[in-house]
Length: 161
Image (cartoon, rainbow, N blue to C red; front, top):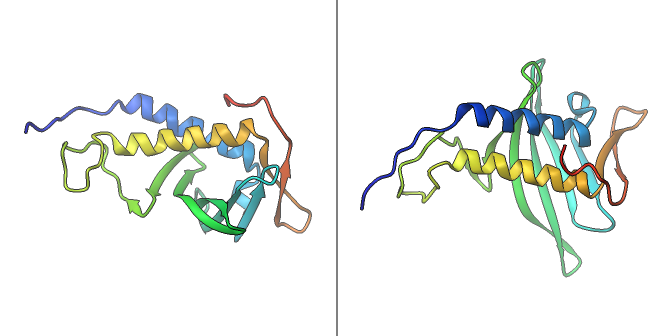
């Protein structure tokens, strides 16, 4: 079997990272102020849980977990870890479903069966997920006590942000 080797499109990826940062700020306008965890529910739909792991001057590291309701219990469906670079205004997936430290390009086939552009794929997944959240009105608003509360705006039209 022959190995496939291609070059990633760095310019295209930077656009994805920049767009993901803008979308994150749309649903989490106070991203730099979050301490601990915030939760959102959409029309009684599954819960979106964001846990801030690290807040620094120029970066934030947080996890996004989506839960499904199964037999009246919440079950983790999707888990992403994202690093936001506030000075550069970029957001990049650093881990997805217990996999982390993605290389820009993988030979294919490989021992983990990653796609040749796995890093690109997980960041495109974050883009689609954030677009879904915006389209369905998921937005976190800060409260006066410095914490966060969730707001459900119903069926929004901000899908392409």
